[in-house]
Image 1: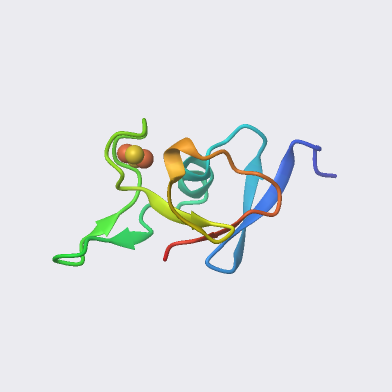
Image 2: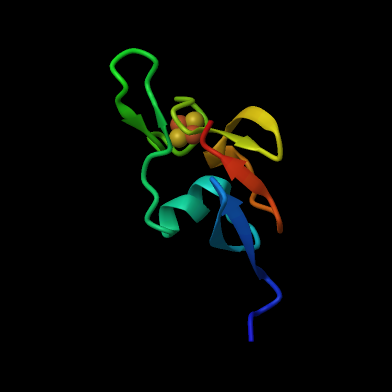
Length: 84
Ligand code: FES
């Protein structure tokens, strides 16, 4: 039985386990997802870098809202997160 503080979000259409209070960046990192976007020039992978809201390397789209920092956005039950 899942504890009530555990839930799922989706990432690029697939389920990812989450816990209450985690940021989306923490959820993705805990699931082994280390990069989710690429640089405009050079196509280099990016994910969490600073982890404190400064670098903007961790941008994701959450429930249709683009350009949110994964390291500063709390994961909520049912969130649909995409890397685009
Ligand atoms: S990891 Fe640097 S702003 Fe999110």
